[in-house]
View: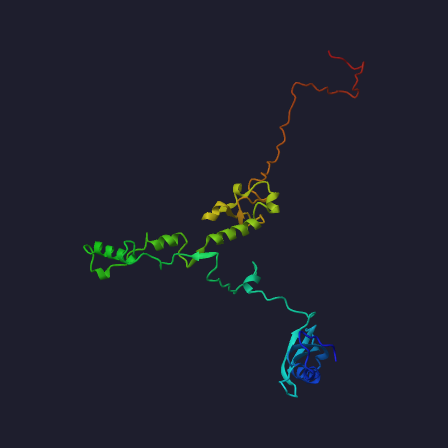
Length: 299
């Protein structure tokens, strides 16, 4: 029998000797041939002992079959408590489970995937949906607008019941929709800051591309401005040859595709030919370029 590992109590003799009972229980719970040698024994309490057997099953290196046996007070027979497969000190374990919200990375979503957003997401805040509109007796309420419209049209039109609904132009809901706030939730200030930090890190002034650029995006003709408060520091690149094409870039970002980085010089034109009309070139008339004495001279 292997040496016992005791905690604070002396193992019960009958429980410590019940190795065969523990092995039989482990073999019944495991597949045939995967229960190995008896490797250890742990005292769980008074007359409670756990026998550990080696696990030979593939994929469970270092795991052990743990069979707990017990004996009642003044009883002469040992009974089986439980049988489980437990990892050992050098066993191969899976990494600690991480929630999906912490494992998700940009680019992991594919077609058909759904990404639920928590109700208390700090990046979002409630938008204007009409539920927090003015009370019915308020001069700005839709009900009061319909009544005023009906009273004005009662003289020139038919019965009030046939009047159309008052237009929504100029109402709070129309203004909120025009500003892009007629949604259940909109981006919060924290969400703006998080997005700005992320974009600045990817396409900001501290990137190697911006450090080597001849100029910043604020003076580039390919920069498309964006609305809202983010437009004060970011824009969208529209240069198809730029590494940031279609991306939100910082105004302090830059690349070699700047619209004014290098203007192509015009092809040089050659200088016009120069003809010297004041020079006289000597042209020999005979074979003797130096002159002949027998040659007749001028008349």
